[in-house]
Length: 128
Image (cartoon, rainbow, N blue to C red; front, side):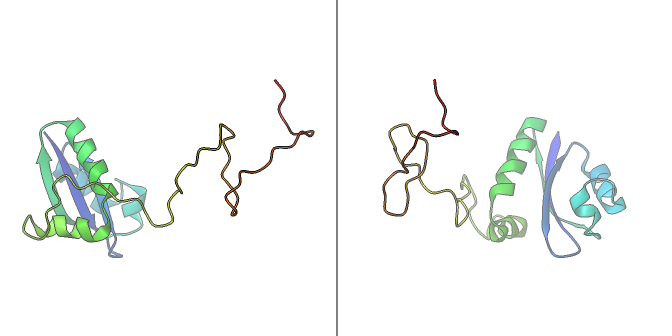
């Protein structure tokens, strides 16, 4: 058996983790020995926890929850009636990487005008 949990830190932030022994892990968090993040944000309180079958399941669920935005983590903690989180995938953040353009193998992004950069031979060019 393993557990996935969400803590509310003293500064109001949320911390998601996984543990094989939830009670012992909460004691470690409260004592400031479990994680650098929570150590500087004491006191911590257990907001939500879930028991899963295997350690691998716990790590996968922890990763999935960490990808969720804050409001969905809070909805998860408020119970199943708040929002349907089902198999929701995390959306990329604003300002994420732009789509990759096909530049004929140059491996460089186009300039503002949409034209790929010009490669010139010089002292820094690679020769085969």
